[in-house]
Length: 156
Image (cartoon, rainbow, N blue to C red):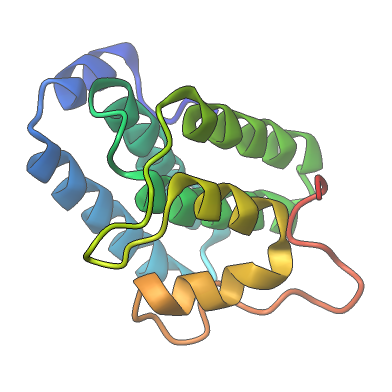
């Protein structure tokens, strides 16, 4: 999933980590707003950009943005599942897992943020995702509950 064109990818790569984090948050907040109006296409666009930005940031700052990558992966996969695009959701999940595994593991620090292994575990165990979301984002009931008998992601 490439939501960012080559020009923007280059431009966003040159931003500082703080600027990348702020832009990621802007896109995630936009996704929340679009979700409230049930605009799935815009939710997918915003979360896709946030996901791509988190992947880009981890290339330059491999010990950072693992939580952001995990949160945006959950939302992208959720939006893709809502559209019935399970193959794309699996592709996003695989890319996120590869990014998380590509850097030296970040362990839980004094600020009590989760480790990269915690993020991997959350992505692989969908039952942990609502709590992870509640811990790191203060959005009510987000991501929205899945209909019964429908997994959030096809890969477990």
